[in-house]
Image 1 (cartoon, rainbow, N blue to C red):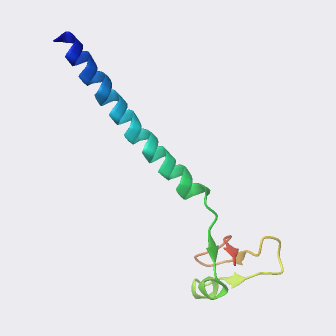
Image 2: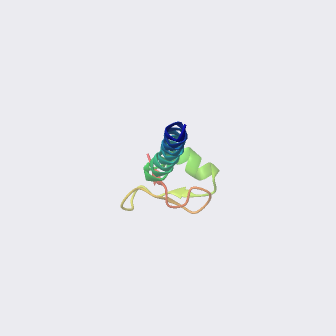
Length: 69
């Protein structure tokens, strides 16, 4: 009987750890992906696409600092 309890605890711990790792991987992916906006999206958000600046940023508005593609 004690072996079954220990085994159940080990399985439960492994399952919870797996869920935690999945959540962490999702968070890293979401933050690490660069975001691009179109020139029209930049303008609609109140910004100005500045393709003459390094990195082609959208300056001002909702998409401030995001790259214009």
